[in-house]
Length: 121
Image (tube, rainbow, N blue to C red):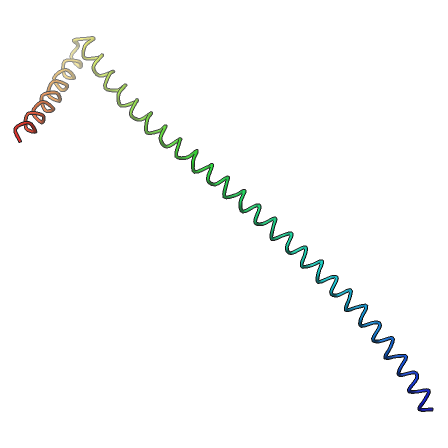
């Protein structure tokens, strides 16, 4: 009787051992697949990060170019405003323009006075 029981237990242990080794192999395979998937995802994130950094650098460069262009355009606007004032002064002698002429003359006199003061120093 003990022999039969021992024999049965031996068979159960062998089946259990076989079952555990197969499941462990499956678990390890699953772990390996999960690890590979995780590694693939990390590589994709690294690539996306590089792409995002490149896009950010290009955007910064474009921003700086636009900023410089804006500064240049502001200078051009100021020059055009000054030319417009001069043309209006030179072009007419109406009541408003005589006031502008006096203002411009005073402005020029102040600039000349500044220059003379700098020369005297």
